[in-house]
Length: 321
Ligand code: SF4
Image (tube, rainbow, N blue to C red):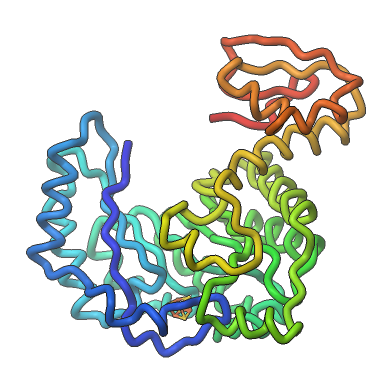
């Protein structure tokens, strides 16, 4: 099961989110033509085996690129559905770019998953990030997506200006209530040439400590895990470009690993002691990097059990893969 990714940059996006550097990259990335889109799909299909693959339009604002262009891309993708093991189309967009009219268009194609860049459901956090949408927009969009029977994904950013541990936890719990089945957790990264960089330099944005953000991400993960919301990703995809452009916030090459091992530690701390059972493939998630978790696991017996699909604390899964 794989996603065939097709990046559709939203050139000319009228928003100006504090964390986004699209103004400095607009013009450098051209959206693919329909021929190029078909070629990307064909090339990927030639390398894929198995079944259940999807075509994924990502870039953040797919439903904001204009209805006719959106239809053209969807028509190209649709040709591959039901043949060559493509089972559907996924896309990501802004909450305020989901309307009843847009949903009617999407309903004519095999769209199976929609991810919304919700970021936070706290009004102050959204405002200071200059997102240009409200928590209410996320709720409306979630309802429209759920009503069509399409799988809802909600992405969150943690550690934005004005954010706190409590606000992030509240957002994660509300995602569950809104019917999210998938999520992505992105600790905030300050990129060059963004408003957030200026806010950082002027002292208007004072990032939380790295440790608090790892705790927050771990606890949000656990809320999703316990409510069967699949966490598709923790942290931005690593790339040389990201490394060169990250000037602050919470960039770490092994962020996902740090969060997974913190999930084990936080759950163990809460339970107080007993037994941790793990598949040896996930030993590093139990011990943590450089064995940093071990002082917190003194009251535990560690038991290797390779029949497990993850890590259990006192008989309860806290991580599965
Ligand atoms: S993150 Fe905000 S500014 Fe950047 S492309 Fe998306 S909507 Fe536009």
